[in-house]
Length: 450
View (cartoon, rainbow, N blue to C red):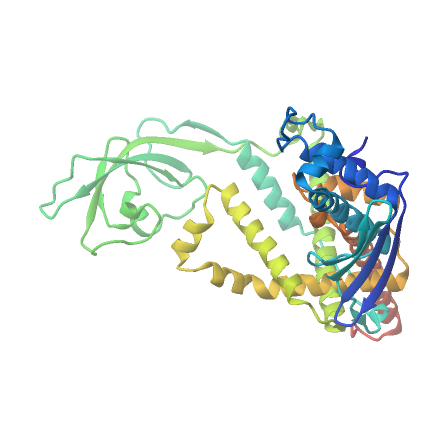
């Protein structure tokens, strides 16, 4: 027996559903289950409760149903049967009605009894539908930035840097550009004496051509040499701290040079693709070209979304905002925790409260909800469909949380389908916007668009 039949009703039982849409994004579902479903639910309710209640004269779980009902009262079985039937049947009814509820429904039981069936009315707030203007006239081109040789050479420089190697600086070497220096730093007191406690630092000048600031005071220093410099070395982050007369004794304990390999066929072949330097350059150009196209596409999608939002009309229920805001805060918390930071620590360090964070997220959340509703309206207008494969992929990607109740899962199929349809609607709008922009350019109309 599957999970639905264990908790709800079997395939042998029948269910009828009628739906009425009311103003204010309300929907009323009237659900009618037959006597078979009620009989099955009553038996399951007995099987569950008999294991939890002692009936005099019987071991727990062994009392006959007739005696059990006489001992505890039939109403207890009715209540348990309704608790099993209502959420599962409601979730199935919501799927059949193609609704996406925003909260748990108000349920009014109209009929329940063995031999009578189970009939109830569920009133629930559902997702609103947005109104659109002429979204098909949106025109936004996709404009990749041309790939320059300067950008290619920056990639080459990065590859060379990754393959760089260190070599001893040699006897008599002096600290300067192209060096990596290890330093021992001690604070100098007001009497000019260096303290006993030393901090170890590394000074990377491998890519530096000119020494600036306090670093310039170390230029030309050799291994073993100690120099007195200003306060910036003490901060360790390039910023002055303390008084201007604070000084530090810096001893150079090691010097090495960073050598970059030559960019040639041998270097290109060493990267594991068995290609020449020219082939590597061409591959880098292609990578940059694809990256430029991807960025241009994302930019176009952002512009299309903004123009769609500008012509969308919809009243967003506050419960949608509250739900999405809660999700956004949980996502923010998860992002911080992945970095080893708690939300409480983050808020304390920035002097913010949860209310402040919610305020920061409110506008982006409202925008995201409005865009979702606009894209769903486009999908309806265009008759877009989610295939079985689409739904299976979405279900795998967005698996329900462990322990989710049937009430919470009601409308999940509609949610998955809308997730698929929003993506398809955005793809359609992008294509239309690109085609419209191309036509305007040919007609000499420029880039003016809705």
